Image (cartoon, rainbow, N blue to C red; front, side):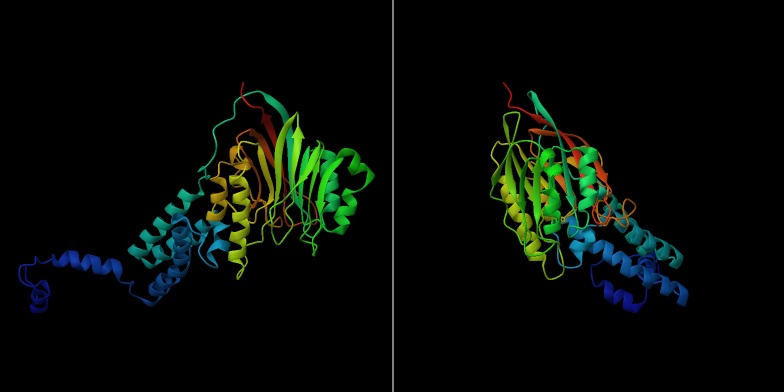
Length: 354
């Protein structure tokens, strides 16, 4: 095979020369395609593929990164759309590298769509003491209070966690009808319509110190069939640009609460402003809590924003339980006048073995 003088010099003494055909193939792979339309298609494929790759790499590295990564992680399954767009444009451009890049990005996204099951505890054993129906609902500044009251009458949950409960919401929950149904409660109002939260219970409830946060997150100990059940409302700040450290800190406090539970049955319910694709939320699950939606096969059902669910959205409303509680069913309910869907979970509460 003949080579040019420049190629002989580049090869250097003692170094094998690559076949010219192989070098040409590599060059064709890396080089953008010729023709104005094809080059335009290839360059247009780069931005969506770069975005998908950045998000998936952060997911693989177990980090939430910086804005806009945490916001995009909430919608990770829908990153298959820009990956598919990148593949379509790369195919139109006849750009092999772009096609391979798009397929790799789509495969990695598909891998991480699988439900996270890192720290789930083993199935509980022992006698079943009670069956509980637990509901969590974010009322969006108290606007959905009438919808909540209707859901309480219809679904009759035993334990209710309410977020964004304003003074009007607190007054509605203090009505005679609600007090008859839920004689035990811990209602804590804040300095804004979004800050208040509440716990309602059919079973005896003792107030407990809640997790500290910008928005109120009250706690309680509920006694069910003689068993203490530690109950905590979750409502950390959302991962807004410029507030990521606050979001991580408040999720970290919920994690510390979960890690310090000892052997007592524990339930954390509310709007976590995080999905299973956020490292800060997976750290919470890794304390040995089970996500009720995940355990019942609906881990990817969106709960927010309600205007686009269930077609498009993120599941940021959760009921997390320790080993003594086994989820049986989980359903998302539509409430009017709120951007969240309520979550209703049915649980078995187990007693200690022996």
